[in-house]
Amino acid sequence: MDVSTLAIPKTVAAQKAEEYAELSGKQRNKEDAALEHLYKSIAKSGAKVINIADAFRETGLNEKGQPKLAIARADWLRVHFAPRRWFRSYWHENLGGGGFSNNPTWNYQATATNIVLPPETFRDSLLDKSYLKSSVPHIPPALRPSINLKNFHILFEVQSWEEYPVDPFLLRRIQGNLFLIIAEWELTPLEASILEAIGKGENQ
Image (tube, rainbow, N blue to C red; front, top):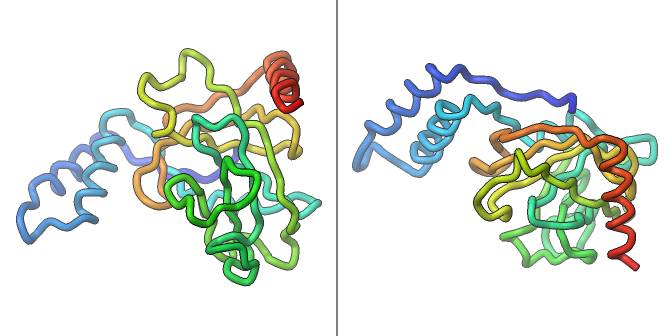
């Protein structure tokens, strides 16, 4: 997947984590705690960081006005994209934005699970206003986290909405739109074909 990421050397990350860890009392706020967690994660794994809002802006829309990327929680089987959705269902609330959900109809109250793109992520005049859906990529056994998948997200390229995606990132949220890239893989055409057939069978 060709998107911009932020790379920080492990040694630099470890030093930054230590600086934030040394703060205490009134000196320390929630932003310091979030940054300490971020740098500790990078120092441990050397993972890259991605801002998903920037990634969606960078990749933009296809010729049909549909996002070229999608994001889902890793425990979802399918993901649905609702254009312009932010609060309730009024389109004027989030021009050029949208939201991803495991619900075919947008539920603005599902704030714990919805993944919302901010306004002006896309050019609103070009953004298709249709609901879209995709299967969520299967995580290979060697890369599958040992803890609950609901703690992770999957970002993937959409070759064509409704076709099985083959080029995903496994992510873990740090804060807001910032995520650690935990793993990247590519499904073979055979794997994608089998998984697409299974998904279609479950929808019948």
